[in-house]
Image (cartoon, rainbow, N blue to C red; front, top):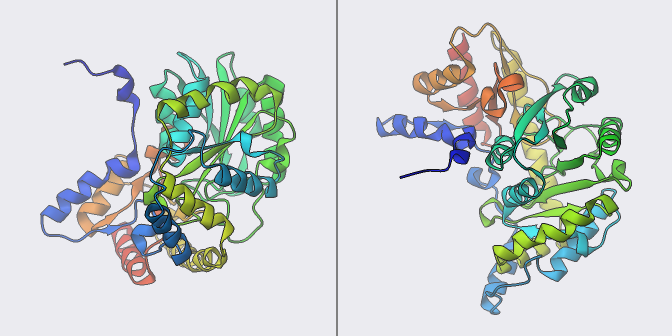
Length: 390
């Protein structure tokens, strides 16, 4: 029977690669999983007050459909958070979603029609390209200087066409961990304003930063058509609970999407209500667990980057945020970065993700490592990778 051609462009390398690891495990071999950026799978958990808020919501009977835009108290708390990062908006500019992925799908489906182009930072998080293709558009990668953590403004300008409708940013970036500074953000905001583009910025790792202050797009936005995506999976350690949000800047240019996108929220009824109470508590309650979490993974980052840069034919820029390293494979003797990753898995039982899964133009020749596991696992994995590349 017929299957829509649109799904052919949907890829998710981070999870697609897992099937190869399962084949290895079925042969009785163990695998070190360094592929998925899920803190909870590596032992981190939401704090007790957040867990209790979820339990209390269930026990108090808050198990019904809430309003499609989200729990009013949570909308207000999210607006306060985003305003602390530079915006000046009210709760009417927030829409709660089932994770950032649903929010991204809603935004892309609201602005992309057949043949439209969306500019993505190369390399980029795979669902961005997949959702653009799914809705009939074409993802266009622009260059990013990995050493200096700056977007190539000239390359962005060169890749603008009459079909371009939006620029997407991910800061801190997945897979590179790079963070754009305020100057770079302002340059991109200016481009969006000049050409009347949407500017979509994913800031889900906004508090997972190591060596510098994080600058949110809100500080550079002014009254520009900026849409922020964020959620509770990473910083707030609530990955399996699937809750995120869309924040619209207070811009007249966004009036139409602000009116129409919520129709998609109504069609899917609402987001999980008990989890919204937990998310509210995660914003209002103590934040010290975040500091502890970030401190621990900074130690992991320092170790992993040092080990990678000491290996033959491997070079790695220093991630400034998130929990990913994106080393480059020098003089790769395999046919591709994907074959490198598969051979590393077959020979050493270490699962990473091929860089081309994050965009063929700028991701190829790299692989992504997640440094969330404990130091014992990381040390073992680094030893195996070092032996493999040697």
